[in-house]
Length: 317
Image (cartoon, rainbow, N blue to C red; front, top):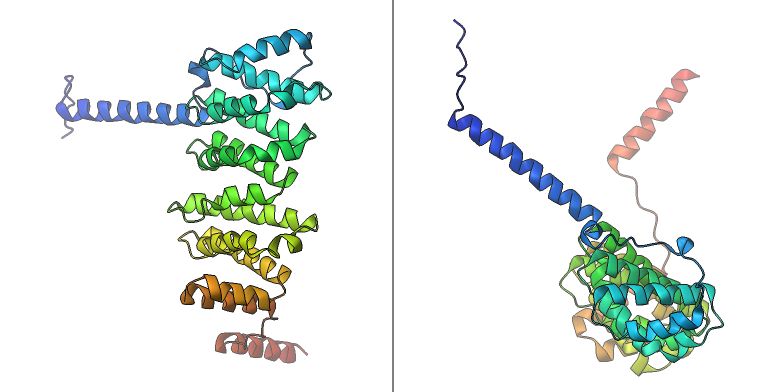
């Protein structure tokens, strides 16, 4: 006998309906989180560098920029960041950015830390444009330490497009202006409890260290114990962190430093400044990495497989 369905709503059907509606709402919210909140930000669209255009009146833009850099309104700060990008990209002989660099960096830092995705992302793009096209890299590096703190946080943001823009900004800095200031600013996060932060810091600290080495500045840098010690401590912390992804680049960085210090000086400094446990681990790790790996003896399974292959070839003949 077929059971007839009731035309009336039951508690179970209402509950199922509510559950489906709740799941749909959560899915929509998740989608919004992935896309960002630009939709709610006054219709602002963040333009990549290739879509920006020349300024029609540079002098008028400079006058407006002075006002915008001191405004507390986020739309003004967004416009200021965009104008800076246009100046750097298309009007490189202009001296405005040089003379107002401190104010520009303050606005960029504030915008990077903003919870508004459009404002933050535009500021991250501005950092890339500055470090790629602004000629006075030393002036940029002098202002970069406090900015990198904000970039590391953004580089591990839950929103993928913000995290990607944050990482691109860090990568642009360490490849365009590898320096002790940049490296030390990154390694301030070496003792972080976050595995994501440790992985990010290890990756780009090694990239920065390789950049310093490529400029033939590493040997002179590590010759000063006061300068190299923070690096050894920072990379040691990263290597011993809970982040699996941080270990390999930290190991490579310690090996590079040891090579630049020619071994014995590195060992002496490590034994003097690190704890006995850390010193022993680091020295052992660096030495192991410098020796050729011994050939691994074949396992029983591998030997049997090889024997079967030999017999098969013999039978085939």
